[in-house]
Image (cartoon, rainbow, N blue to C red; front, side, top):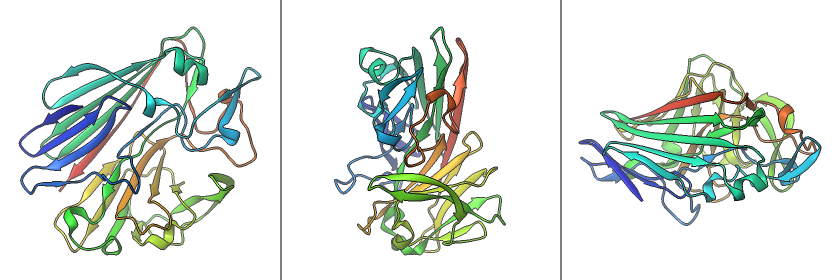
Length: 293
């Protein structure tokens, strides 16, 4: 376990999966990040797939490869490149296990950096192969709602930036696992860019917002002075999720650069919708900032 901290915050990051497990407000002594066996994760990294692949598999050059939900990095041990006290850099390079799922040479580097107002996540994907590669990348942080135990889940709201949007989502079908069905529908829980949270809106599972150009999302409540803001400029999509049917006191706000498959459509990796492709030697960086109040 790696620790970084400054005067305001303390973060704990597990090298196994490069997962942020705690993010403490030091002055008030509470954790922003979910920790409970009801959902035994905290903030998984999603790579090189997001969500379910059809038949938990895909094709590359006509050969079928298995792909776990959200990819495989959650089960990989990352190398500690540097820990300066308030900044941690972890890396994962392809290995014998990853190549069974994903026949590419790559390096994934993740930087966690604390500042006076929160934490920055920076993901760098490098193609170190001699052929093109294709990937999705996402982050799955789960936040305690209510924040610091103030209010209830239903007292909180989500506001997307810019304001005045007509929010749309990908329709989700369960088979019983959640997949897209290919349709885009209005997000009925939204009023413009605003959503009053309730557990019923998650009965069908995850809500992947389709609107292009979303710059950020704010989680807040009149019951507390605290709030959580995520910048989303580098991520085309954002997903909202909490555990269905559990009235769980957490909310995942997930930046997505990629999408789950459409039900019934096993895909060729190089044609996968919303994936990023890199030529040999190319790199791509994705960054988002969590601002905490």
